[in-house]
Figure 1 (cartoon, one colour):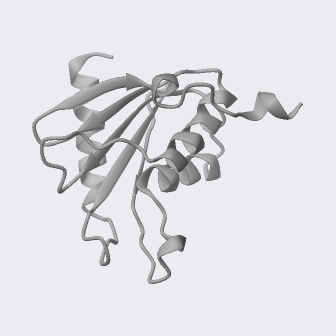
Figure 2: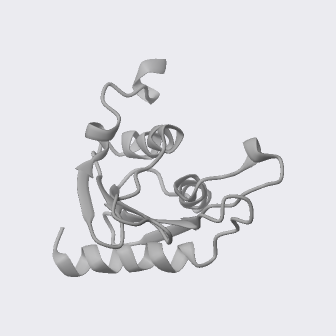
Length: 139
């Protein structure tokens, strides 16, 4: 991924984080998914007073992408936390699995940009979720 595309994807994730609904954690998160046709789909975390019903930014972005009919072609993901300090924020385990589902639909291993204010950690999804369970395991 070239530097300009990477920066644009990170900027889209930051813009999404500005829309986060995070009154309980006070930790706004944004995610941006880049598809192989250049489309970018974003999401932000959406918390709920019943904490277990909260949605992570990556899950919201995936739901939007699938709701728009996207099936495969996931090339890269950027995840940012507006309050992430020196350590880059990474997708939680659930989000890694949700991202894997979309990646498996197109047989891709997307680059995941884990971002803090001072750093960008670049790692493949398969490195974040080795030996993932996916659609191929079901038949």
